[in-house]
Amino acid sequence: MFNAEIPSRAELPSTARLVKSTVIAAVAALVILITIVLPAEYSIDPTGIGRALKLTQMGEIKKQLAIEAEVDRQRDRQLSPMPPDRRSSLAGLLAGLLISPAAAHPNHDNDTENQMMPGAKPPIAVAQPAPVGKTDEVVFTLKPNEGIEYKMTMLRGGVAQFSWRTDGGKVNYDMHGTPAGGGKETSYKKGSQIASDTGALTAAYDGSHGWFWRNRGSADVTITLKVNGAYTEIKRMN
Image 1 (cartoon, rainbow, N blue to C red):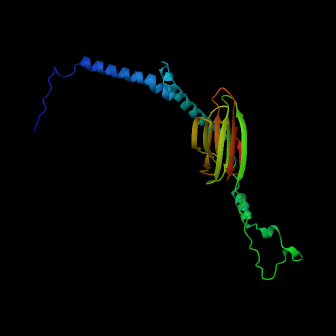
Image 2: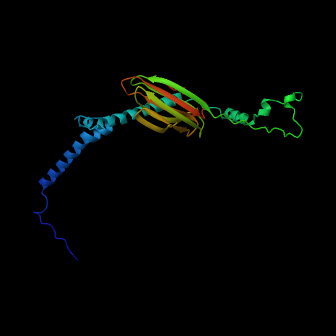
Image 3: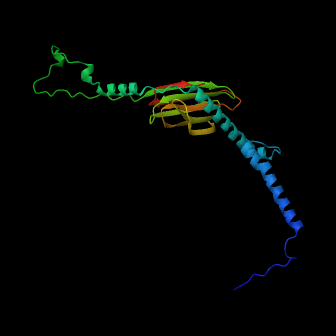
């Protein structure tokens, strides 16, 4: 069995050397904290190196998104719309399925055009399909540092197709939902300095679902929003 030799006292690092190594490591950690961590995470840049490396801008975006999300949550708790009446929605759906062409145009025995020829088969009543959904287009302009929020009132599982684009600049946005009656909101998607987005929004629960935009640029930005699908209304929340 091989036994490692025990180093002599002369080979061990001295106390002064250990202290020197510790001080060097602490200084290096402090430099990294000041030049990289603080600018990137908290937009604090006392040396200016973070801005030169574009880390300060990253910290500013993170800080602003956190502030906007908190403001949005507080506003949603105060302005949560009342949930739509499920019974009226179901009644409308059943009415659309039960109405047929025969019911819309009743037969008249004395009407020659409605008399059947001998051997002809009676017409088959086909149920009318339920409406595809609502369609809306909203156009609005954001001034520098101005924010705006639009939301749709939806039932759980409802799907709304959407597309929006900007004219004049880019914006920060947060696509989210708030439960009917209040509660913790759900963030579906967010981004910063975006010019357009398209897709489908599926409601995670009964409540209001939509977008909050903010213009962080120096010029006015016009946004055009188009939506289509299973929602009862869309309205501005602030």
